Length: 470
Image (tube, rainbow, N blue to C red; front, side, top):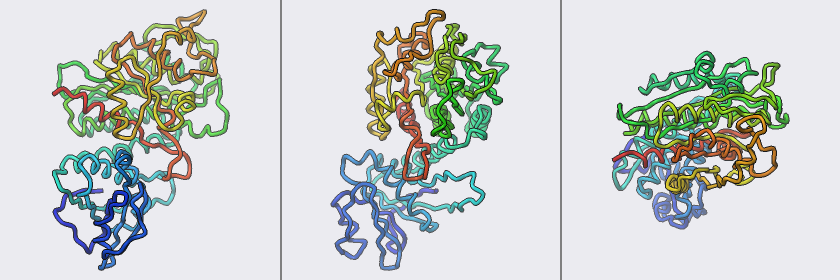
């Protein structure tokens, strides 16, 4: 969609009218001063008609506590009503501050996402121009909001794509095309390069698939010659059978989403480049397909890794931490970023701990933790701190290798996975792990089955923006 600023509303055109709870003076003004059967509860919508027969979409944005969720309200409105929209739609933005308006625009853009891209009959997509009124300068929200919303839709399409289309090679191609369009560097490490450089853990995970693993390295350097401010690492398992420790068949089709962390990394690097932010970042996506074959790695095997640490395989379904181990070792050794953040749909344990409300956050850097928590609450992509106690290291001790990839215990699975990753960070003081298994993919109003949420893009983008050197 297209967004432009206007000074005055046209009373004869269709209008989106945000209404705070029990503050309906504007609505009464536009509807002939009647008392509407509408209270402005969050994410509620009611359609009224003006004197010219134009539609007035009264959108409830709730109370002050609901401000962080305002994007959800606009997303739902767009998804539910866009089929009735004309070429031009107005948005009464004077009741929103700049931050709320940006969230509203992101929500509107996300509401245009169409999940059925493989259907034989495609719904026609009409281009709508949103004319926005405001009481202040809204150039920032009008510029950034559509970019962020459109990029979230792009990474949602990646996560929702079927595994026969979305191979590791496909993720590499996606990144290459994005880099060419948005002027950042992208390097693809295929099977030959991975063997030469020692990505043994990535290669082990991908050994059973006909689709070879790929490591995607993206670099955006706003200040050439300076060091890397932030390194991002994403788990890119394009399909996860569990390997020889095979998963149950129920809901196995959803394992196409096991590259949600990789999608966030790809989307954020693209966004930073498109927005021209003054920061140096590197993104590494370690991608493989965990399949079942005679060549698959086995429980009981001992494999090597990029760090040269040996790993005893207890469970081949604990594969995400293996590809991340190589990705973390690689980015820290090669680029030496000041801060490192990895994102992964890593464990069912974090879902049992936090349900679908927040990502599990692991770090020993209290400043990073506070900053990420504050941002998460502000953009409604919440994180919750979980411990990295030394006591959990014994759960990963192996008799025959440097460490094992799975404790085998039915408790603290998200924590022991994070402790495993920590062993490959070279004691980096500013490392954070985000386990997004419960928030990257799930039930929604917008699909009949589970689908991508787009979680993480706004969280990491805002973190990066707050980390820019003045």
